[in-house]
Amino acid sequence: MAQNRAAIRQEIINNRTELGQTIRQLGRVDLKAQAQHKFQEVKPVMIARVRERAEELIPEAKDKYLELKPVVVERAKEKWEELKPVVAERSKEKEGQVKALVMAKASRKLGPIQASFGPIVHQVKQVDYVDLVETLKGLYAQVAQVVTARLEPVLASRLDQLSRRSGVPALKRALPALKRGG
Image 1: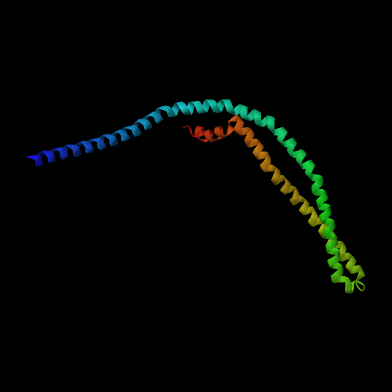
Image 2: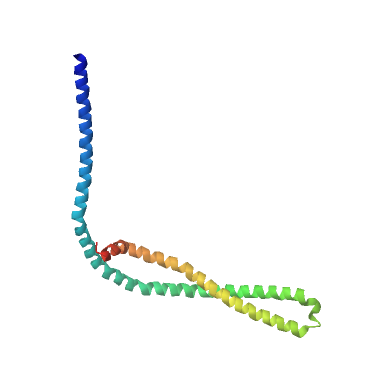
């Protein structure tokens, strides 16, 4: 009889434990369903709010863009004008250095035969110099591209800072969802 009572108690404990676990699992399933239901209720409201906010921010963002564009363009022009003489000066320095190197190398290579082929050597020196000038013009253009490339991230960073202050990034992230309609 004592064994019977102990077995019945153990069975009751097991049933209670099993029942508690089942109730907890049902509660979790119910919470997920409730959360999903609440999300479906709130979603249209949030989309409407985002659309309203977008309608408010888009003109503001356009105004900011129009306001800042001339400032940014002017600053880029100023920076270019500031750097242009430096680039030109360095280009001239390099031109002089390269010219001297080319002339020295040509003199070493052509020195022994220069006396007998003087006119030809003179023409070769002129051709090398012309090619050198063209090469330096190309280098000058490359330097200008590098300067521009260095300025672009600075300008982009400044514009990004301004757009963060005005809430434009949030708007940019929201626009694709708005265009899809949900």
